[in-house]
Length: 256
Image (tube, rainbow, N blue to C red):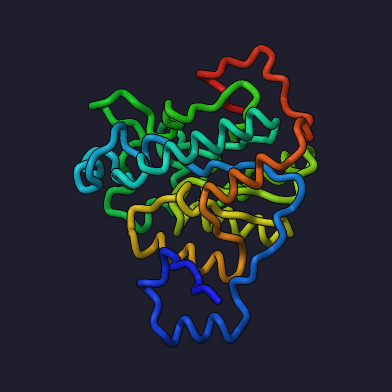
């Protein structure tokens, strides 16, 4: 019998941890579901920075940036998005929203000394909540604005998945330990089948990224590499969904 392929989280687990997960039966491979939506969580300038650069440089301007790890994931996201669009599979983005006076920042202001900084960086002229140009939404894509980590909390995401007839979600984006995990747990809690694309997610902390992938894979989702996910998507029927027509929508301003 061949040995199991090493996982990104193995280096952070003790031998006791590995034994407990195996003995308890965690990490079983769940079913895919038949009608997935691709969810791209918060891949905006606030979390990516405006260009690829080391994280400690990027966070000087963008306090929530994940630095170069964000930009390494962008080509993966491009391939997933392109394939889903070609197959007629829903592509749903989330990103943040903040009042000009910052009042609705709420609890986001409690745990960061820089939490009161504006999501717009004067040196670039970019709004941090704008999804990066490299994966900008198209006219038939759906964009959900949110104030808290989960894409479901206080948003119409659940009702959009319902009207689309989705039974499953494929989750990508950032941060793995924060908004991705919160979205995954809420999807799981609503009995959607959940897949997380390992190399399509990123975080500012390498340890948090790996351990949260481990925990989601153990209990809430299948954590799979992008090539496995792409191969599955290619096998799905064409045109299963009644997507928005995109008529009259400006792709540069595709906020709903």
